Amino acid sequence: MASSLRLEDPSFFAGQWQAVLTARDDAPQAQALQDKPSNTCLLDLEPNQTLGKGAECLGAWLEQTPIGWFADPDGLSITGKEGSRIQFFSRQRDGLYLTTLKSGLVITLTHTVKQP
Image 1 (tube, one colour):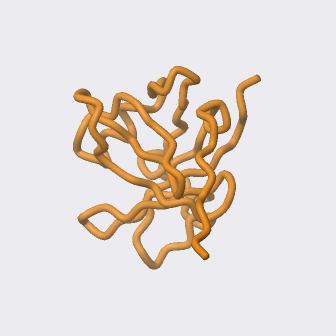
Image 2: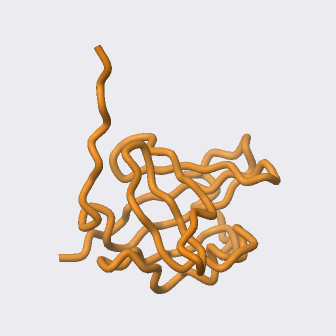
């Protein structure tokens, strides 16, 4: 019997997220505590599935300008100007998503504040 993953409503993801860039062997929690603003971004996922504040910071790591986002059954996708996926974040648990860049660096997304 196959099981299917549930596709969350976009409102589930809307709100503020913290993105932390780490090396593969770094603990994201330890990295977030360090005073390195270039390794941490606050990112707003808007209810209309666009990226708000923090998109430029994330774009510096992705080497492309992220414009929007959409939910996947097993994660979260960040899209570029044509609406195509430029990066996929796999779901680790509710509110925690992870991706590995071509460089081997890891971005961890943590949902910090849900918008009402």
